[in-house]
Image (tube, rainbow, N blue to C red; front, side):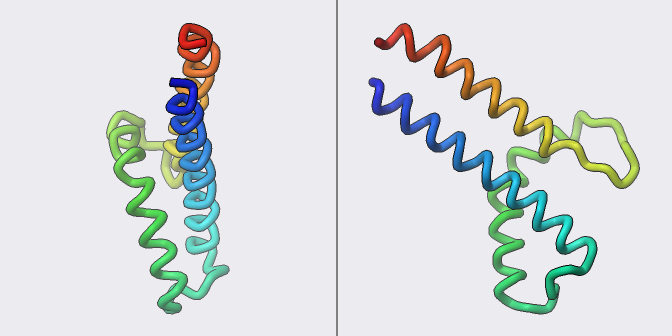
Length: 96
């Protein structure tokens, strides 16, 4: 059971970094730092979008319009942190 908890925590940590990479990529794309016509850059952006959008879409639906600021990745990161800490502090001691 401990191996399952460690695997879930590792998957949450990996998704944490994917969300951060997606936010950084969106900034680089918006400020035209990366070449948007490059096929490799486009495929990376598409991959990051497909990995993060299913989790970010429900958050964006309930968020008020803040203009050009999108804080949904921050809210998702906070939720992931909460779930990770809940697993480590509440679920793991019950298993051990």
